[in-house]
Length: 350
Image 1 (cartoon, rainbow, N blue to C red):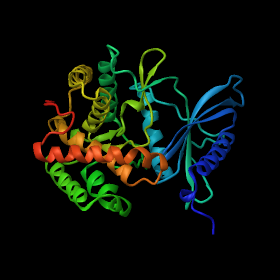
Image 2 (cartoon, rainbow, N blue to C red):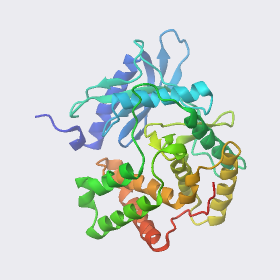
Image 3 (cartoon, helix red, strand yellow):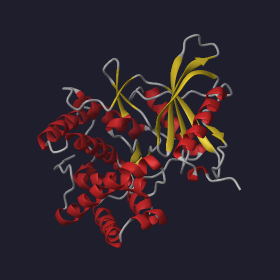
């Protein structure tokens, strides 16, 4: 019986994934000069350099191979549908998908040891610097405006037939999330920690609005600084739509500001200054959603998503940094239950 892919050493996993990346490049008619692994957690992301037939110049591409708990092919096609609508609307700069010569944008492939096919998508590479500096004078307002333009586009987006993406409401993040539901997470949590998360779930659920209406739509759902690029012309591009789905736009706002808070460390004035400029940029495009009044709950929700990822993962890289991060989040949640305020708390009005 063939050994499970997930039971292999990390080096062996990476070797098999690299071979698969070369195969995907060939299917896309990309003759690779270089294949570089950018990240391997639940997805393996590569930067490819090579030429395609009819294109004399070498170009750069992003290849994403979805390995563990991957989105279905239908979900990934829907992700690309939304990204193409964003590009068509010229709302925000996002990567352009690169189809195979046969026109396939999502490719399903067998990976030895995996129970089912894995999927691969190729995008054009956007040159730039990831995680733009928060200290750059105009950065905050630009990021705020980019977030708002994405949400403004979403408000008018009409999903095509067959559009299917995950939900990011209370039920999906808390009640059905890995931290409270998976056996793996349950083994990693103490009884006290598990009960703590149940209480946090009930508290947040009582304060959040119901899904639907003007405060609900397709969101990025992972809009941290690492998924923002400062391009060579000084504009901001948004990448990695793998988690996009139905949710509250305020979750995107909380995700941006939560990631900024981590970079500011103990410098609360720097965080407040960035937030003020970020919100001014957002409001220059559209008003904050009414759910802004529950900003603390969206900060909690963002960290619960991270806990779900950490506690449900078997990836060696995640298991390296994850436990310490999880302990920090659980400590913040204890404080939230005592005070009603979460790290990054702000009094926001729509």
